[in-house]
Image (cartoon, rainbow, N blue to C red; front, side):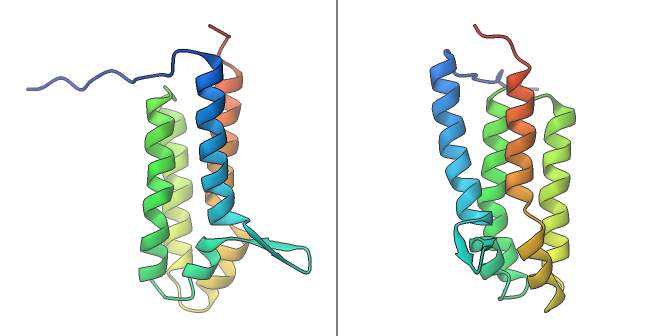
Amino acid sequence: MTRRPTTRRPATRQQVDAELGRLDRLAKLLDSQFSILGFRFGWDGIASLVPVVGDAATMLPSAYLIWRARELGLPASVLRRMAMNTAFDFVGGSVPVAGTVFDLFFKANLKNMALLRRHLSEIPER
Protein backbone atom coordinates (compact mmCIF):
# COMPACT_ATOMS: atom_id res chain seq x y z
CA MET A 1 0.00 0.00 0.00
CA THR A 2 1.48 3.33 -1.03
CA ARG A 3 1.33 6.24 1.31
CA ARG A 4 -0.35 9.42 0.11
CA PRO A 5 2.10 12.33 0.02
CA THR A 6 1.58 15.07 2.53
CA THR A 7 0.10 18.36 1.38
CA ARG A 8 2.56 20.80 -0.08
CA ARG A 9 1.58 24.02 1.59
CA PRO A 10 3.32 27.12 0.23
CA ALA A 11 6.17 28.17 2.48
CA THR A 12 5.29 31.83 3.01
CA ARG A 13 2.20 33.98 3.42
CA GLN A 14 3.22 35.76 0.22
CA GLN A 15 3.04 32.46 -1.71
CA VAL A 16 -0.36 31.66 -0.16
CA ASP A 17 -1.63 35.13 -1.13
CA ALA A 18 -0.35 34.68 -4.70
CA GLU A 19 -2.14 31.32 -4.97
CA LEU A 20 -5.33 32.84 -3.55
CA GLY A 21 -5.12 35.56 -6.20
CA ARG A 22 -4.88 32.97 -8.97
CA LEU A 23 -7.79 30.97 -7.56
CA ASP A 24 -9.85 34.16 -7.09
CA ARG A 25 -9.37 35.00 -10.76
CA LEU A 26 -10.52 31.50 -11.74
CA ALA A 27 -13.62 31.69 -9.50
CA LYS A 28 -14.55 35.12 -10.87
CA LEU A 29 -14.03 33.94 -14.45
CA LEU A 30 -16.45 31.08 -13.82
CA ASP A 31 -19.06 32.92 -11.72
CA SER A 32 -18.93 36.69 -12.23
CA GLN A 33 -16.77 37.67 -15.22
CA PHE A 34 -19.51 39.56 -17.09
CA SER A 35 -22.15 42.09 -16.14
CA ILE A 36 -25.37 43.04 -17.87
CA LEU A 37 -27.55 45.66 -16.19
CA GLY A 38 -25.68 45.10 -12.94
CA PHE A 39 -26.31 41.34 -13.00
CA ARG A 40 -23.04 39.38 -12.78
CA PHE A 41 -22.46 35.98 -14.39
CA GLY A 42 -19.55 33.97 -15.69
CA TRP A 43 -18.62 31.15 -18.00
CA ASP A 44 -20.42 28.63 -15.77
CA GLY A 45 -23.75 30.32 -16.55
CA ILE A 46 -22.94 30.60 -20.25
CA ALA A 47 -21.76 26.98 -20.53
CA SER A 48 -24.95 25.77 -18.86
CA LEU A 49 -26.81 26.73 -22.04
CA VAL A 50 -25.48 23.40 -23.34
CA PRO A 51 -27.23 20.91 -21.03
CA VAL A 52 -25.01 18.50 -19.08
CA VAL A 53 -21.96 18.94 -21.35
CA GLY A 54 -21.56 22.61 -20.42
CA ASP A 55 -21.90 21.86 -16.74
CA ALA A 56 -19.44 18.97 -16.99
CA ALA A 57 -16.92 21.25 -18.73
CA THR A 58 -17.08 23.89 -16.01
CA MET A 59 -16.88 21.26 -13.29
CA LEU A 60 -13.23 20.59 -14.21
CA PRO A 61 -11.93 24.03 -13.19
CA SER A 62 -14.16 23.84 -10.09
CA ALA A 63 -12.51 20.54 -9.19
CA TYR A 64 -9.10 22.15 -9.73
CA LEU A 65 -10.01 24.84 -7.20
CA ILE A 66 -10.87 22.13 -4.64
CA TRP A 67 -7.65 20.24 -5.40
CA ARG A 68 -5.59 23.41 -4.83
CA ALA A 69 -7.47 24.00 -1.57
CA ARG A 70 -6.40 20.50 -0.50
CA GLU A 71 -2.80 21.35 -1.39
CA LEU A 72 -3.10 24.49 0.75
CA GLY A 73 -3.93 22.28 3.71
CA LEU A 74 -7.68 22.68 4.17
CA PRO A 75 -9.23 20.03 6.42
CA ALA A 76 -11.38 17.28 4.94
CA SER A 77 -14.56 18.79 6.41
CA VAL A 78 -14.07 22.03 4.45
CA LEU A 79 -13.08 20.14 1.29
CA ARG A 80 -16.27 18.06 1.58
CA ARG A 81 -18.35 21.21 1.84
CA MET A 82 -16.61 22.65 -1.22
CA ALA A 83 -17.24 19.40 -3.12
CA MET A 84 -20.90 19.51 -2.10
CA ASN A 85 -21.20 23.08 -3.44
CA THR A 86 -19.68 21.96 -6.74
CA ALA A 87 -21.87 18.84 -6.95
CA PHE A 88 -24.99 20.88 -6.15
CA ASP A 89 -24.00 23.33 -8.90
CA PHE A 90 -23.51 20.47 -11.37
CA VAL A 91 -26.79 18.71 -10.55
CA GLY A 92 -28.84 21.89 -10.37
CA GLY A 93 -27.29 23.25 -13.53
CA SER A 94 -27.95 20.05 -15.48
CA VAL A 95 -31.72 20.53 -15.46
CA PRO A 96 -32.77 21.82 -18.89
CA VAL A 97 -33.77 25.52 -18.96
CA ALA A 98 -34.21 25.87 -15.17
CA GLY A 99 -30.59 24.75 -14.76
CA THR A 100 -29.34 27.76 -16.70
CA VAL A 101 -31.26 30.10 -14.40
CA PHE A 102 -29.95 28.14 -11.41
CA ASP A 103 -26.34 28.52 -12.63
CA LEU A 104 -26.78 32.26 -12.93
CA PHE A 105 -27.73 32.55 -9.25
CA PHE A 106 -25.83 29.75 -7.47
CA LYS A 107 -22.15 30.71 -7.58
CA ALA A 108 -20.39 27.63 -6.22
CA ASN A 109 -16.86 28.79 -7.06
CA LEU A 110 -17.25 32.11 -5.25
CA LYS A 111 -18.75 30.23 -2.27
CA ASN A 112 -15.78 27.86 -2.31
CA MET A 113 -13.32 30.75 -2.39
CA ALA A 114 -15.07 32.27 0.63
CA LEU A 115 -14.66 28.94 2.48
CA LEU A 116 -10.99 28.77 1.47
CA ARG A 117 -10.27 32.33 2.57
CA ARG A 118 -12.16 31.90 5.86
CA HIS A 119 -10.15 28.82 6.73
CA LEU A 120 -6.80 30.31 5.74
CA SER A 121 -7.50 33.47 7.74
CA GLU A 122 -7.76 31.30 10.87
CA ILE A 123 -4.25 29.91 10.36
CA PRO A 124 -1.53 31.93 12.15
CA GLU A 125 1.28 33.53 10.14
CA ARG A 126 4.40 31.41 9.77
